[in-house]
Length: 364
Image 1 (spheres, rainbow, N blue to C red):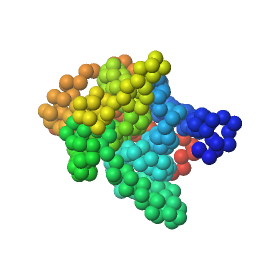
Image 2: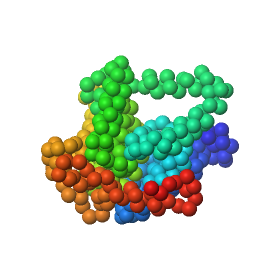
Image 3: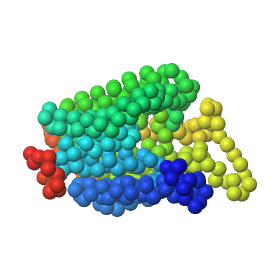
Image 4: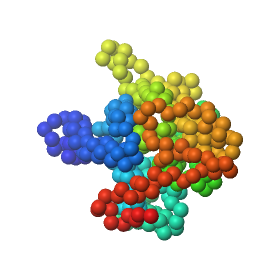
């Protein structure tokens, strides 16, 4: 991109921005389109797409600057195809998302958990894995050392934007143990709850595994907010809009303070040292990470817990405001006398609404 920018009759940095903005505008608009498509399938008000995605500060700041939007588009597109029963096509798109950016494909874990038959699971997982390997194989063949250096580079990254900063130094070796152990434990808990409660709601399971990843990882950068915004649109994670807005404004404030000097035009310069324990930006990142933990535990996992724990946790949540997503596809499970949940019937509906081009979809 920098080479192409140098050929433009403008300064290189400005040319780079123009080219990046033009390229990223395409997946950005497609993210909005696919989110609207899913909203229509679920009967979710289109105004939520504006409130929880398009008009959010994080989306506006990152939309034409960050390449995460490519992977997010493939993820949202794959989620729509999954809802319509096209598991092979969905797996292929999630493979492209993983090839674009591994983080954006994390929802695939929840999608896989939602499938009950081995045939469906294979129809989804094999195309995803095959696509990821097919994209990476040429690069590994040409320069395996460079390809492997990517994984070493990511592994050596310091703690950034995680609650671990409250307890550990930035390069603490414990980060390499806390992340996999906590993530695997949370995924195992999601899997157990899905089987215990008979939960097959792909949206609920996808956002739970995604938030489990961000609650566990030692690298939770501001641009990763783009991965979770579509789930706020489609599921009632935050029951009050003010909480979601405050959460997103905190992320945006972190972007502004950590990566720019907004008061410089007035001759006021400032800087922050995130490595310092008492740095305010550091603690903003910690609070943001703990907020994700709150969403995961108190708004996701505890209300799904069996017995009195689940009923008590659900009673603490305020009722959804008008315009919230339909209850049947957003883990608002109805419990029968033995405490188990009825599988959401809406999934049968979305499987029957596949587009004519979805050749591998099956109506069950």
